[in-house]
Image (cartoon, rainbow, N blue to C red; front, side, top):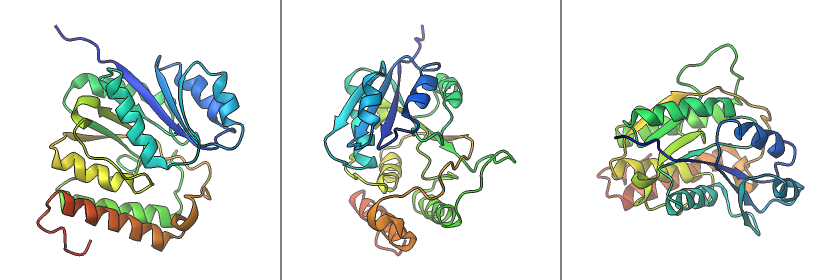
Length: 243
């Protein structure tokens, strides 16, 4: 007899005072258990989180998006959840899409269900900044070529992860280059990967990555270095080829 999988929704936040309360209020309509990783916010985010009925892990300083992802995956597995659904807190991911992820989880034929902003675009989608779209396209193409994947969006943070399947992944990249490591590790460990369309929303096209990553050329170089390093670690035959 099958049982309903237990699901935790994980949300990394950093200085999200303008959106955190509204996003969490809406997420609670679809998910009873929510974990927020406050990655060293210096605005009113900690105070606003204190009034929310959610679990909060607070970093005293900003440790990076990848570190928050690692912590959410570890916490979900440690607490006995079957699945972790991750989403952002800046209103670029719609909580109303959570039931679709839950439905796909129920099919039990994937280990990673990755949201894609480009799988099925519509007139309602926003137009992403050109340099962000071009880097996404380029890096997604390289990942597909190196790993034998056919994904359409390498960087969407709206995902569902089967906790047990991710348990043995070696994840230690703390920054925004975390997806480059994750995809290599997922393929290396034989995880089953699927995509589902999510709406493309850009509320703040000028949002900063922070520091040197705001320069597009440098950001792509960081992504490529992380990908190359991870391919070497996992023993890829063409790891030393130019990516």
